[in-house]
Length: 413
Image (cartoon, rainbow, N blue to C red; front, side):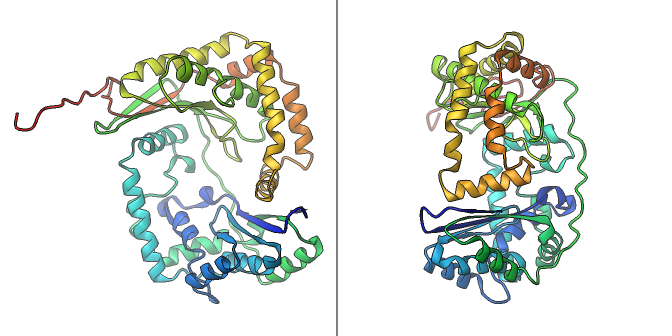
């Protein structure tokens, strides 16, 4: 996909490989992360340091990965940018020294995250929401498996997934489309199609009943609280109605949504409060997730307020003003998604990935404008079930949610 934008001499290209998490073998959990981190660490033509110097000397940026790779340069350096992007994408050699370094860095990163209550809560929450679905696994991988991985494991996953029939690309900026197509065609002439496989993930099921689990971390400064259940796919026909519902309930600008205005502004319980179902919607089901970071003594109070507000949006129609305010913000902020070449490129990838069509802007405006207060209540009744949710909290709270008090005992006593 190409979009010529001649206002500034800037060239941006983004490339995405499909279904990386879904096609990563469970018994190799972590190989996708390692593979992604090693793709710019050396090719048969250039070492990792050479690649870094080439792009830095051009004043550009190159970010390689499996799920997403990107390059950004001034337009005169376009050929260099595209050649490096495709070289790293199609010809990484996964040098042993770089592999070992990245492997140890990844293990250290995972070990550090295990000490952070937000990460612990998030991982358990995802595991309970998704079960055996790949999205239920930690995104960075399993440390016991990572310790046993080899460069050959990375090469095998790369060969399987990094094929042109499993990739989508967007190019935005100051260029002539025919010239860019010719360049990309030449650079990919030897990139052969493959068989990445068709994902067959298990279905994501709602919990049968309310499930509360608490991770006690007595030394944590803050408690992190997640509440929710499985959500929707991006192609859900109710997407725009749910988007407006999100902005009424827990995703509004500033602190105008119900949860932020109550939990933060009126109750003073937190700085960060959110709730939405559309933000994680993708090719696979996302999750309806409520989140707050607060003090441990607030557990019972925030739990009660969240459940009260979730039931209220189901039982009572929102005001016309609430709905109109949400719609005005969504429609008014839409152009800001397209203010830079980077953002335009990202939007093009999303449009292609989720099959939104190139009339997406018109469909967005029409879909949001048509939402009514009755629609918002209907969506809440249909897609939010407070009785079948997962609640996970991590922090200085015991298994019942009571704060763990730390006694300040003087030394020598």
